[in-house]
Image (cartoon, rainbow, N blue to C red; front, side, top):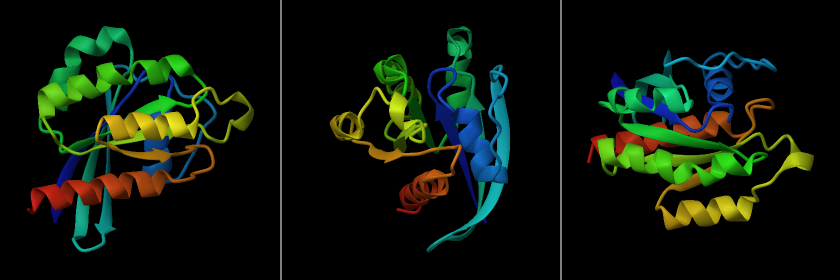
Length: 170
């Protein structure tokens, strides 16, 4: 069985915890308490071409106060979902910080950029075009998701896991 460690990165309130619970338990709650430090979940799944895989998912608190713990949590990560909230431009503007802290710690391990909360169509502040452009400039893949509806959530995690396994088995 393959084992991978994935970290979820992004500002507080972008929907990291909602994405994890949608993926692991296929549930959605309207409100979560802020993640303090780190929340650790695990899901065993079958990845095409690889078979049984166990994903350890580290949901990191996005608050500034946890910044000094970030490097510790990134230790041993095989890849990351970097998430912003499409309805809050400031979460998009902070992506450089998240990507560079991951790159400093983990080098060129696979990253997937996620624009979350696409179900809130009337409130979107960051267009899909902007997200794609940013991803291209930083050499990362890009997906839009909605933890609420489940749109692209499983695809996001499975794509990242497959990319990680491709890297590990080269």
